[in-house]
Image (cartoon, rainbow, N blue to C red; front, side, top):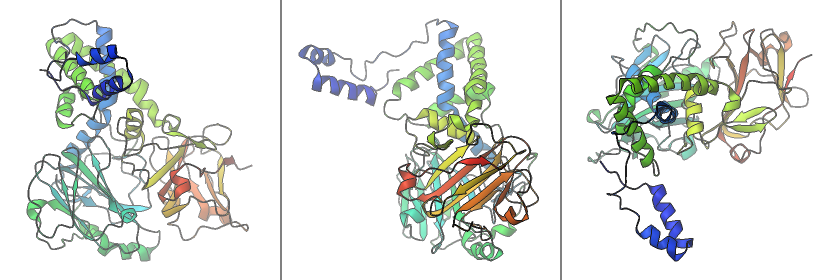
Length: 488
């Protein structure tokens, strides 16, 4: 079956006509129409090495989308909104679950969580039926509802940075064209039917704020459009029934993409996710790959083997921060194009492996490192200091924090139950000159410094700075994270 000419080809032809010679123009005029474009044939017998090359490309491209597909299948098995295993928000398809406090360190659903916000989570099939998501009146409290399509790009703008008004927001899929009922405050359309929502509502570390946030988060509820009445629904999230799970909650992140199963899922992904401009030719190659594999068991075995190799050689190294984003100064890297990846396949896949579900850059900027100033790996057997000069903490409209993660990008359980420090903390101590020093290591830096200490495992770890709703120096990259020093 022939497919339309790609947008990239169309642009190329336009450029040729604009700047080329008459001969070029005549050549362009004879280019086949969109219904005559030659596509790969499944009747050829390509060498295995060629097929493996296409398979590796397909694996890297589709890895984030398979990740999303498998997360949805797992989370939406929940029989009702609540906490999976008592730690992770989960709900049936078309609804969301909400935490009622910071996320627990035992969860392994998502790497690089933070303990500055109260999270929610839900997955949708927006073409089957749109979803209504409620936004209560948060007042001056920072909040953002990050909405992700199957590519892991954000869609819509709901949150404090956008001046979002309280009300009812309709989330719809690309094929939905139904009637919007009276009482809906706004409509947000996803580029793919599979989508999810991760509300984030700021909470400081006091019992008073923990109590104050409860009536607000109890109104953060989502449900199918057919259940919309125009009245604000509430769920007491603190008393919602837990959902049992067999997961152990230890070790690395749940393995969301299984190489041995990936190419069984790729045809579904290609059908679910519309190609971006210029991707039509890629889709044709990957469909051709699937046709070949369906006819030849040996080629199918070869591409599955190639997926396993790509997982080990390319995907796994993304857990190292040097392979994420771009240098940010003083040994740190910063995120690029987060949640607005477009055709930035490198950063999309890197983020999906290392710290999936980032916010878009204007909502949050991320800085991360595995190393101290000399370039040596951070190790909990040492104590490190990170000093923000007076007036040089991350410049934000929202809030900032520094989080410590173990080598798998999860919290290190500790007696202080402390995993991040920043705006939320009311007991941080500043130096006499107004600067702020944060300490990291497995041993206490001393009783007088413990309020500023992030406990680390006695092994390699990483540090991670979030700047929510950053000011211009955060957005343009002129602000640099501090040097990490070994405490003598």
